[in-house]
Length: 140
Image 1 (cartoon, rainbow, N blue to C red):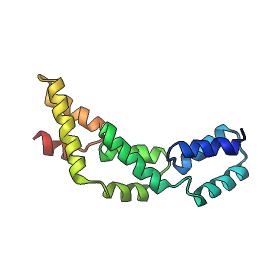
Image 2 (tube, rainbow, N blue to C red):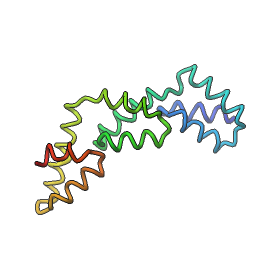
Image 3 (spheres, rainbow, N blue to C red):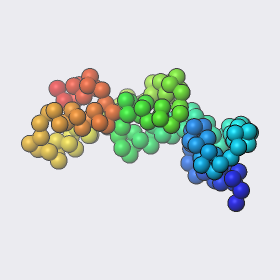
Image 4 (cartoon, helix red, strand yellow):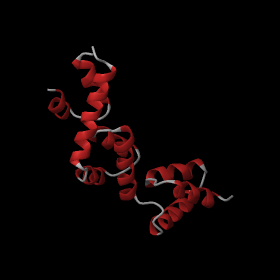
């Protein structure tokens, strides 16, 4: 299997950011020129699209892990997605789902920690990526 085939398989498996694909190419020890050429082709053929990656990433992390905006933004930036694109995609969040996720996490934490103090609940929710203002809105 050639390096190009490996990269194609890597991109076909799930949505990837351009940065992740470049990192994979470096791991495969592809030359810079070869990597640039292949990445341009992958973008042209829609194998790699940062906007689609950001949407997919947000949908997955909000659905399964119930992450908040802060954590989503940090993790997308770690994966090389431009800040303007991160802001755009976070602005498109379904507020009802977002608020339901926060409420669910609060209720789950309270069920699992019936005698837990509010400070621990705040730290838990902040670790999930919610802001103090958002947390105060549901915790009171």
